[in-house]
Image (cartoon, rainbow, N blue to C red; front, side, top):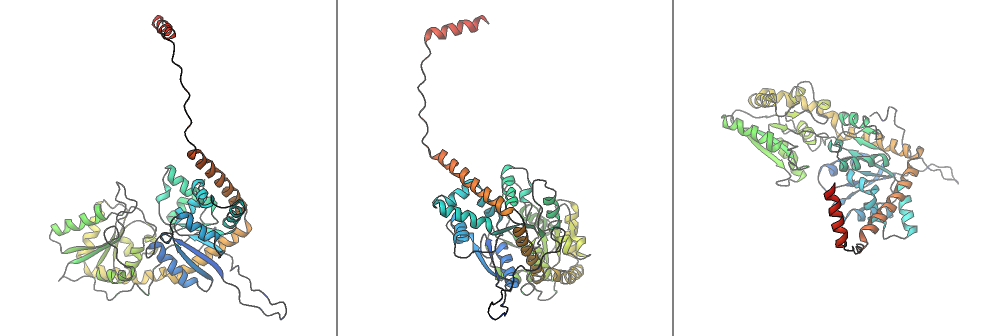
Length: 425
């Protein structure tokens, strides 16, 4: 992985030497804390896999937002607890944003003494804080998104999940550049094919889709399940084509992670119709399971696909091409088999074991950047200002409304004088 155009530094851990005997002790492992939104979902999957392959380099802890009463409770646990982590990585980026937001930070620190508050601010500023961007959600011009993304300048390094996101964020003159590209991986031990039976003529072709159809719910169907995938399958059923859908929609019913490998092995074709994605993970899991894919041009699909599978990347999900590619895949079992075989080879480069080395380089570079930059001082000032601004805000809204002054009645004679003056104009 290239990090800001230079080769990442080696591990920063230094072996200590016994002063009496001159014998070198094993270097003390650094400490790393992942902040994750919920258990057994996308970010938790990342944390678990990175923990598996970087356990020799870090003592790793994962904290879940849902295990705490509120965000201030979690932030106090992280920065006022016994463990002083070398790195706190916010896989859930909005929590990092709230750390530097005036009203949120005031809620975290308002009940502390001045000495405790100064200690908290010092701990936060001196800790290497990193985060990751996995989607295009914060690239809009609205005020909320601008506030969320501006906090990237206050962390000690952030990654993006694809080359296209890297390009977007480097083009923003108001943001620091990403420290690296950390694409998602796939667990090849869990996701693997049972066989390459990708649908025979004696049964319907089973089309799969997985995700959360209500993600960022609005008038736009971002994931495309309801507006693209389901209508497309129904259209072919109405034409008499033997095809059926089988969907893992978190918005409808939760399917445990341990059941997902069997799900992928049960489908003949995976369809992704998203407008934007960071990876997407179900595509990698389908590839590892020996399943051919039809997808929009999102995330890292073009970076990981082989030459044949790239032919089934469509720019516009509403185009005739999307339907034509779908028809071709549904009707040709030999084509599906060839795609499955190619995917099993291509996906080997996406194993978590290989991806974990990129993460190690990212963390090493973030620690080095923290050590050599003036970011800690910058963060100290930002946090003190955040507390003061938050205090002013809550002081203002907690004051009782001022009693309005009594307005004197305008004398009648003045009213008539004004009326006559207006009538003369």
